[in-house]
Image (tube, rainbow, N blue to C red):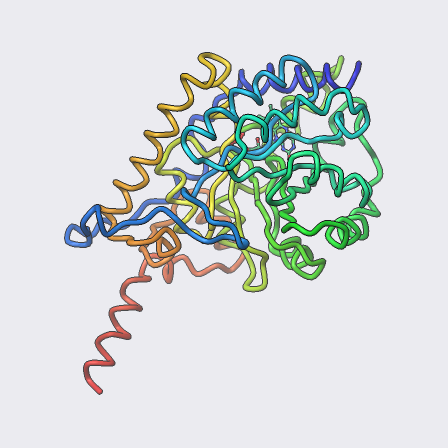
Amino acid sequence: MSASERKDDHVRLAASQQATTNAFDDVAFLHHALAGIDADAVTLESEILGLSWPVPFYINAMTGGSAHTGEINRALAIAARETGVPLASGSMSVGLDDPSALPTFRVLRDENPDGIVFANIGIERSADDARRAVAGLDADALQVHVNSLQETVMPEGSRSFGHWAESLERIIAAVDVPVIVKEVGFGLSSRTLSRLAAAGAAGADVSGRGGTDFIRIENARRSGGDYDYLTGWGQSAVACLLDAPADAPTLFASGGVRTPLDVVRALALGARAVGVSGSFLRIVLEGGAEALVPVLRQWIAHIRALQTALGVASVDRFVDTDLIITGETAEFCRARGIDITAIARRTDAAGAAERSRNVR
Ligand SMILES: Cc1cc2nc3c(=O)[nH]c(=O)nc-3n(C[C@H](O)[C@H](O)[C@H](O)COP(=O)(O)O)c2cc1C
């Protein structure tokens, strides 16, 4: 099977998956009835990795490399252009190995000349490939994906992961845009996030489990389907954000994001911006850019509405809200020694500081 046929398989199989419940359901905002502010006091804009983001979410890496996926990329790019939502390319390996496939990626920039666009390569690619990927899209940042479990279950996947950390350092040294290391749906642990920071990664997208599941996708592509028992491997984005160390790179989150509420939950857990793949892929496959544009506009409006009701003037202040963590995620926090009571009482701490200032 060719690499471009694999891309068509991924789209078909991913589109048939639908996240219903996942770890985002373990996160609830403590409702404060008098916390709200005026809508015109709210901004969705923020500065992240030196880039001006109009909104705190993005269309995350998916595809390119075949005629069909090139058309999907065109629709995604048009929707991004019409709404200002940043977007990431799918892995550009096919285009790096066969330049005749590059236009199926380049369309992301051609249709969206002024938007924020990320290039994307696998961590095993060379420094030269990293430079070519960034140049090919005039990219604002480079996503480098790590996907050892996907490769393990992929029939034609790699089995050699030992050189990845050194390869990452070479890629980071080679490009002059920020590098964001991302998982593809299995999460980045606390230890991994510290190692990525030490290697010089500017950002990390924890891309956790609970949405698109590449074990299911690759297992469906195996004749025996024999890796079925691995489904569910990894940590959710929620767990990864809760467990992130103080020295983590700038945090991005993805994996199972279904609604604007999931976006603001991730922002409240420390992500600076939130990536969405599967939920937007299904819409674009059904109705193209015409269907995706109103959905993106609605997400922007709803994020603003939630911000207003929660009293969060700028998106980087969601981290001041009180969150109740329950369910399997609370179990994870117990096992990892994460204090969820402190997260449920963040405004108490701010209030206590305020009260003690008044006493003095
Ligand atoms: C069809 C499809 C193809 C993907 N291809 C890539 C890829 O080439 N590179 C990459 O970094 N991630 C890729 N991903 C992973 C996503 O960027 C994301 O990390 C993952 O799907 C979890 O997010 P979701 O639950 O919102 O889909 C792909 C996802 C989908 C749905």
